[in-house]
Image (cartoon, rainbow, N blue to C red):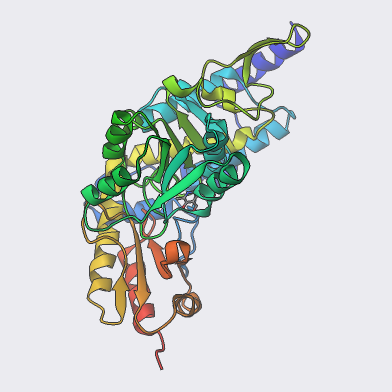
Length: 425
Ligand SMILES: Cc1ncc(COP(=O)(O)O)c(C=O)c1O
């Protein structure tokens, strides 16, 4: 038996026998069985909270920056590290890749072959930005409320290839108003619309399906930065109809830090050129003859040695959320954020900047204090161990509160109390 074959057989044998290197703690937690999944039962959400190592004394409201990971994710990463370090192998197999991407394809409603692993959302954005055949004079339409990750790559392209970036300010009047704003910017030189699914500033949900129809009717591409949407609410990439969609695993998906996924529609794989390539990007090459065939799937955007434990952890995160059910996750996030929205709206010293309409409001609520600069409010809340995120993008100058499944109504009440006690004089 060849050495590789021997290793494969031995590892497969261990896996079938259920032998891994989990800690006693992890095993104990695994035994704690899940209650019936009932999103209307507070006891169920209290159980969900026990799945996270988050401390009780500090209320964490920055999922939009970084999500907390639950034990099943942490355990999966640790177990994989233990397993792989004991034999010093990368652990990369086609089977594992296919398993994880199948889980992701089911979760996001697309073909697993349309998914590439990335290190974060920024990397996915860069693959699309640098891979599209954009030339001098081509126009890209985007918003004034982008995260730096979806503005700097386009500005760099503007510098390097002299494309032109055109902006619209997201309107809160109606989804139609945003469609109209994009339409007004479209010209014969427009090649791409690049928008966030959920803005990082006010948590506004943009009408992606309608943008996609508009883009198709005008024969331009649609790219979506989904960093703030993936894991917050359910959606199907097939139904959204965009050409490419970048996400990270480490926010609302609750996956390990430095994980991401990039969706590139099948029909776009030969349009978005793979620029950073190496081992795994190809499906065959001959160096001397000078021939190269890219991998037929989105794997062409992957290259080199990567962390398998992180990718296994991302799969565990997708399974964790699927176990709860993404529609239940969204219902909970909405309950918490709607409560926060209502309470903040009734406070005379507060101006809420997030959309009033339920269909445009997400689980991130941004507000300003009418008398105190937002960074001072944030510093005050920090002293109460209330972790918020300051938003300066788009000139918003507010504080953003993310509400996810581990947050509680009691934490929101603590936050409201903290805001009420901001010194104004
Ligand atoms: C809308 C948006 N896009 C992209 C990013 C960057 O994500 P990452 O750090 O995973 O690249 C963020 C991070 O906050 C974001 O809010």
